[in-house]
Length: 454
Ligand SMILES: [Zn+2]
Image (cartoon, rainbow, N blue to C red; front, side, top):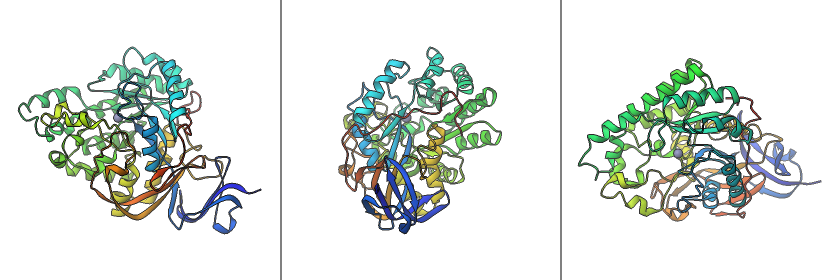
């Protein structure tokens, strides 16, 4: 009996490195990994023409679908952008609407399964002193990630972080902390009166020390409570060193980096304008170099998009006063491109780290491994074929996001996702999506209340 699909003549990105061969898919799962002559017969055969075939990306932090902000993005447009970026699983994060009721979780699963073209799960949040008790119930429902802020607009206090970490220490899962110290932001913002017409003032009002203080405090709490602490979007060399020291002391702490912080730097903000406003902000060049180095050596666990675009009017609102602009940029179509172009092709990243930070590690952090995050027999056939040497100029008309603009406009990049497959079904080919909304399936994180493997 022929299997459903065979992709041959590829360079497979396996744990052991790049290997010549191909894979077979049956019933949505990988059924064979072999050299071409040992692959089974198939109904459909694709010749990868020696391109790299790697596990689809798991984007662990993206704001795709907020029921109150569907003019920004939704599961359909956001998952199309994801597929076009080689992302096969997305972990959606709340934007403004709370996700802390069973009813909300059930509604979100229905919305995702009818609209998304890739698989998905999502975070609960924003966490505060009222909703901490939901942790065990949410974990039972498969929602094992909890988002909290140390700063506005969802600022919570150290007591809530202590209680949350104690809960996940007992029940499994993890908390993700947006780490910027509100006291520092208040003080530095005050100094910039009269300078808000310059976009760079946004970054100057949120200095590095705001991040490192908040990270240090959260890591210190985790050391005492136990439980898995995840630091959202790390941006500074000081913040990285706090995470690194925590890891060395045996604290269960992980972190992530976003493509915009790997590409752009603070000095460019006045040229890029309000599109480059996000939190945490763009940082000096030296921090960007530190991020690449930490990604390569393993201090940073995964690459995520923090995709949070908006209608262009909400960016233009900040043309004369950067405080008025929406904070957030597109990114889900760019993560893999950035890692290929600025990482692999510039010698800042190895293929084995590319594999770790895009799929293997996030699959473990979210309790999806080995169903997701690896090319092996029995795992879901989620993969992307990339042309590592193809060059392109990024333009808004190639982007699938609802927003119609991209922070990366005009950037020349090298390394392009060509085809994306979710559970063996092709969802993206070159410049178009190839499946209807509703192909995506909800993924429950973790197994029951067992602590997730980190
Ligand atoms: Zn975010």
